[in-house]
Image (cartoon, rainbow, N blue to C red; front, side, top):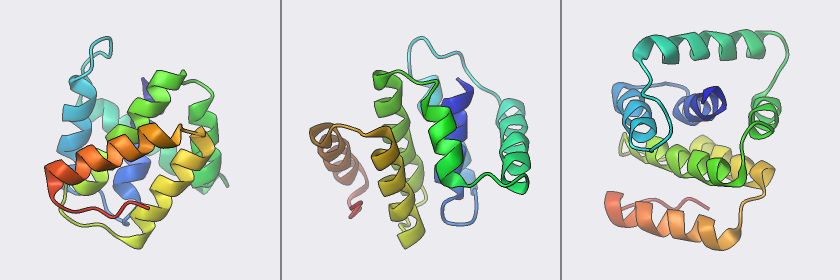
Length: 133
């Protein structure tokens, strides 16, 4: 579960700030999936601290994504991308850095393009915006 939280936090922070809507979306998105135990704000804070430590110790976004992806099976990788899209669109803003993060994530995870297109289409219907490529 920690790799999913790490990737979710990186998505939330892609615009330089983790706001309340993004934090709520992390909790809600992970809680909706069977087989993933509920997470708390305390767990999110703990993983966030670990991520900051990694960044201070020379890791970058790409390295953290690569490390996290090694612990995820294909379905969890797709789930992590779908959650990242939800988090990024949840605050009704879309920045170039967020689009860049999604591209980096899908490239490292080597996601099937048809699944990515489906995730983007579904998100655009729900949020009414989102040029994610």
